[in-house]
Length: 104
Length: 499
Image (tube, rainbow over the protein chains, first blue to last red):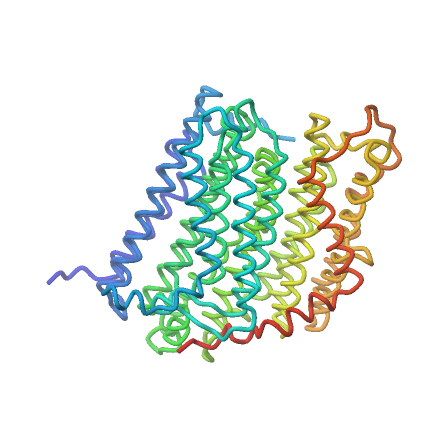
């Protein structure tokens, strides 16, 4: 069987999560921001599946949970892109810096 | 799972949820088959009827023993029911607000607004009732995704687009952070049921990795703080509240926020206080930090509201400040935390929906969201002006209103448990809040405004009157609500696993 220990998966997930968070907070292109959020959600999936296989109390629940996460993430991405398209039609920009018309 | 097993569950317990689901499906089908150029406003009345049916079913459940279906993933206890009632009542009033709302040119022909409100309500009810991380997460996302679309429903309006996009990005990040925390909790315990998690956490093998439990706690709390717009995670709230259509703003500031508090209370209390063990200490150790969040929320909400001229933005900051007040009982962890939180949320529901009804009335008639739109309202609509004054007095927390009783309860609970700094921050920020609340009052009563008499439509008038009566009634006889809560709901059954 595989000899890759659990901690490697967890570190991979943590790195992926941090890259996603960094991207979501710093990138200017709105599409990249949405992709970064997907990265964060996929980090969660790696965690869940790794724990389901090698955790202290392994079990199938983690894989079921990750199926739900994938589905919901897809729905969220679809809604996010739809809103971005509506915004793009009106404003002709996907630059996050220019979305500031409500500054007081 | 066989059909027999599926049918053996007591589905009758889910009657309130089912009436919401069925109404949502009905609304979407009717919308589909309606001719293009027919106003969709009657759909709001159908939605309202569905919610009233759900309220009736929910009231009939008061006093029922704890039950659960679907292998303990969905629980029916007093805690869930008490908060579900608040969600239902609030959404019913928001449907009345929606009746009056006029958006862009083709607004009247758009039906999705009504059934998305229904699905969002369903998500909130799922959050109140779930006892499993998976269902909690699905409920949270059902509420969130529906609200993203609702925020951006005026698709040709720049503000609405921008509000929706900011909400999606912030909400997505918050969801990912919460989920990351949940994944550690799952990983250490191998369970997703909240009660099973609480029992498994006592396991010495879990205690060896206690830093992961603490990390999970922090991440879940941060993620959920976005939902209730507590500082420093409140940045999205003013923009989203300002850009959304007013009924949606009301929904976000009342139902969505209450659902966030319900989720926080259930998640943290059941996981970290459900079973005696080392992990109880985590919630107690976290108290100073949560107290800091509560204090910062009150200060930022009230101080930044001072310099707002846009009335919706001002009330967005006001609702941030109120989130800070509601976090105080969660910090003090006294025995009456549920009672004070529930009563405050009830008072907040009444005064905030009432205030937003008046805001919707004035901003739509004046075509301006600046707070000077209220000038001379006393001359143009004396009764509405009077009701707005009551809501503002209640929001400011002055006597004879529900807001005062709620705030007093929270204040006493923090004093009783020795959180003197938090109590004094609360008093100080309340005094600061008088400045911007009474600025609006000055506009209404002492500034001269142009224009003729204006009168609210029937839907708005009903909401305003109900909220005024509620605010005054629970302000003068708070025992009406408190006794109902005390006798109908045995909140301790939150901790008793159902058999």
